[in-house]
Image (cartoon, rainbow, N blue to C red; front, side, top):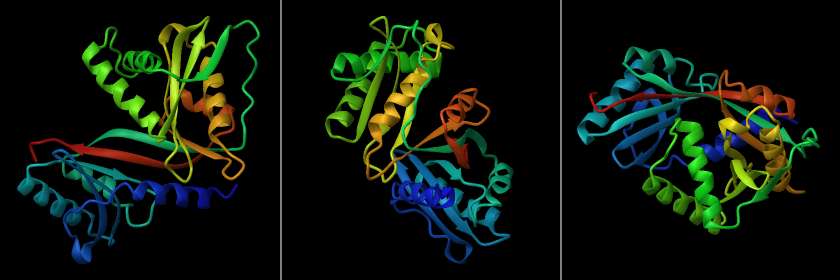
Length: 261
């Protein structure tokens, strides 16, 4: 596997999501933008050496005028972005997400768990999606009893994504009871595995490995045997992914600055 080529392909497909207008940086360089409500998301900039602080200032002035919050995603090893982390920090940004991009080639054989009544299946109903979202809120946001209104809204959105063929969702069932899930994108050159979780009461039993292996084997095809995922740096889950054959490609950091610019 040519990891450099894979990284280029993944960056190219993610760049395509940043297609909105934003401030021109002129001779300072270029950047890509995505606007979500009152938030300006900046990514994949190519800034001339020594001009990172000036480029950040230009973006902040634009955001002030338009009353927008700013989030800036940086791949520190990418040419033109090396100086941005320090410039963003100096401007008052804080890192809110520090991710490692990993990739897997081919199918996965998860270690068998003969004494565990676990089944992984595609989600086939809105109720199954509701249960996925309820567990996701519990796992990712440490919310013991998520709001029904929030879970209903997100489950409906996810169900529509699956109906439209944008994503494919999976559930892990322990003794017939949902204890985890994940989903994979279907709209990209290389599918991305996301939202992997198991409930706290079901962890350290090999369920996550079975879940990820099933999803990968279902997502890859004869024409594309690659699948990628993002994991928080220093998250113990990274060890699991490495044990399944994932290899690291690159880091990305998201820096945020709130309304008080």
